[in-house]
Length: 178
Image (cartoon, rainbow, N blue to C red; front, side, top):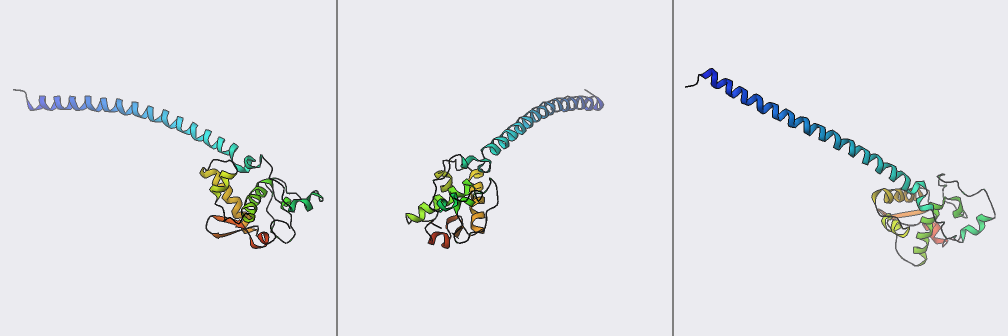
């Protein structure tokens, strides 16, 4: 019959072998985890770069110029009034031409002026993204929402219901012809 010390040594040896196998497995898992994390970081960097390139603020929705509205006729005779890209949105006032806004903002106003002219309701930013040929992904929609909110804050647009934009009363009352 084996001695108690001999049995303990056998159990200790078995436990040591199990610990060694688990340590080897943990090392393999750790190496796989490190490789997976490195790949994930590379994809995250690539996604951020693509997002930066495709973001509306980088001129994506400014690729096509908006159809000039009646407001723009007055502004063409006064060069230098047009806003530079990424410039601030001025407060709306009677007689202020759309051309003081960047092309991106003009496109938003044109889309909403068309809706107003056709007596259709307000638009959401997802609907605007679709109208502009953009994918309705969160980054694009939020970029449009930021622009629309800025236009609301400056008096160009109204947001009577959360997330639904239309021309502001003064702008709408003029039918886009100020």
